[in-house]
Amino acid sequence: MITVNVNLAERSYPIHIGEGLLDDGALIQQVIPGSQVAIITNTIVGRLYLDRLIANLPARKVDVLELPDGEVFKTLDTWSGIHQFLGEKRHNRGTTIVALGGGVVGDMAGFAAATWQRGVRFVQIPTTLLAQVDSSVGGKTGVNLPVGKNLVGAFWQPAAVLADTTVLSSLPEREYRAGLAEVLKYGIIHDRAFFDWLLQHHEALLLRAPEALTNAVRVSCVTKASVVARDEREEGRRAILNYGHTFGHAIESLSGYGHWLHGEAVGLGMVMAADLAARMKMLPSADARAIRKAVAAFGLPVARPQELTAKAMKLAFGMDKKVLDGRVRFVLATRIGCVDICDDVPSSLLDETLNTDFLCEFDD
Image (cartoon, rainbow, N blue to C red; front, top):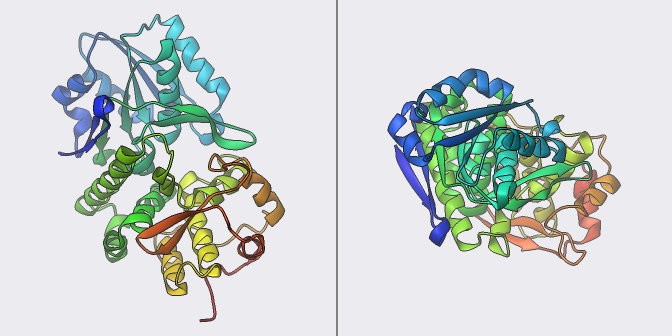
């Protein structure tokens, strides 16, 4: 087992990464103390892993709420239903809420933990690659609205994260590849050597080779933990973690939640961000092409959705959480391994990116 610490003073917590953690009773009982536990999962994950988790929680009152699966259910109504469940089962301030699932379950369970009786203990057990490397770490919780993604929520750090890499073997291929987009993001925003390593090992990663997969999760979590420790509430530099997300969130909301997986939209969003940065002469065109090639190598979309117009995309940008004083802020690469936050993007160049059919293809 590898442990990565998120250093946030009294809110610090460990991320435990390794094989078979769901069967480590001593570890599970250590991070889930007390006599009262509420497990929030979904119908698919519950069928696979719920019994194994409960078997390692003896002498506890364990209540389980299984939610329907999918981004389309990440709503205020579902969040309210979690509160109703907690009330009916008489959970008090000493309870621990456990998220057993992917990013949707983690975001909603975390938001419920932040708001139930003004905040209770929360533990993340992420079961998707995207959740293990991104959404389970950092304390962002929330739900979507029809007008935008994650617009209602709270910062609420977990007490611990248990990333059992063996559960990733059960992920559908499309969902697994979507998680690789967030892994690739860390190389683009922070670590050229990691970006190069990912390309060198992309076949092993696509085959879910344990050693390569564990290393990818570890490096991703180390990078995110470092950024979060410096800017917990995204008042500055933490925004770099949103690379590709301004474009990606617009694609998700305009297409209808669930049509694109989050990682697919982020992958294409990173390509669009690279295209825009190259048009602004911020990013060498060779690096823009390398980003597009890397996203494609992991089997993710790299073509602009023809049905999404520039006008609709720009309207969706206006509801993005990164808008500040009416100005849309984009995270743009200056080279692979380094990004800046920009709020002075020329509208004409943004239109070129939003209208082009051949992203990151330039005449040098």
